[in-house]
Length: 478
Image (cartoon, rainbow, N blue to C red; front, top):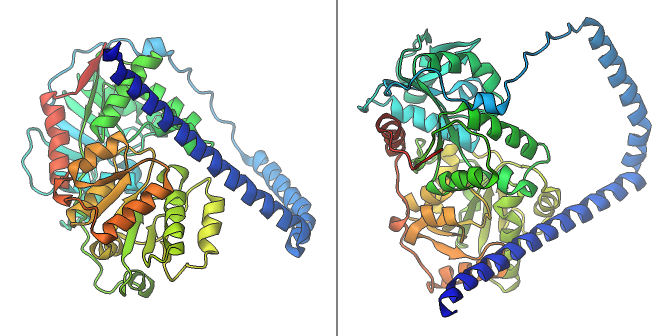
């Protein structure tokens, strides 16, 4: 019986952690509901609400008239060809695989429109590193697709590397090509289907990059439209792809376990591997940042930086609650948030915008560029990252590379990335986070950032190419 004690203790710890996460989610929803209720009452009883009641039927009539007009000129779309059933799509390829001869990295979405997201940063940095003159086992080409044709994305690469501009040249798919959908491929499979067919006809393979499984494992953390879209994408990707490439070993293992547990249809012999993201920002710190950026980290009060889109899983509410407790105890420290406004955080955004410390000890920059972010990294006392779900944790390595202490949630992927070079606190625990910040300020708690993962984008690119060229996969699924 004594031998079962560690297993029971581990199960109990996991159960308590799960309960704490669910309690935090319920509290988040309570605050959001309360905020939206107050906003509804404000609209109902305010002058602006009365005006909106008057304008709403007019707006509806205009919208209906516009829709009717469009319907008169809209050409009916041709009926779509029926999709093959999952079992047929998962059948073994007709052409035997050919050893990798060349790697084509799809950058189509980012080349069309760079929205500056974390995923697009990965695309740009990997593409840049692959075209910086390094020697690889196989040739690497950044590619974009248009109308079923594939082009070398020369203009895109020139913008990244500063090389002389060149026209995009069409690429002929060759036997053994590996086609890597590095960017967000959620809406791309239909467009890329002709390319996939030609790659496979030559014995090549399709490799899909997966950044995380959050919409599948934590659907309540996402916008309501995301989980069904992600679910449909994942199930199609599993039967369309010969391999998956995750941005951390944790995500690779989660994917393999999830496919097995749910018995999801997949291509026979599906390969799963991983690489780590780079930490070296290509842009140097801003010499003359905006006055507001400079003010956020000037003076004697230490600044704690938080980087990431404002969304439930990132833990911004946990951070704000922790700092409010610190300020109430007389601790003079600043919270500097860098990240775009996301979803399901109306109450939190309202709290930030109306906070008495905003502009004094609380700052939020939704539009900071890479050079301003580098400026803030260089001057922050530490990075805080209280997320409860992530695919990697890029801010950890970016901060550690600059010698900054990292205080983050104790979740598996952060242990993989932060290693012994970060300070870990329980998930969704503002009191624990506040205590860790106080201990860091007092010198009672420290870490050696040099022990954290330190990978350059050149290393990330080489890992991707070597893994694909040498078939160095973590696992294969029958």
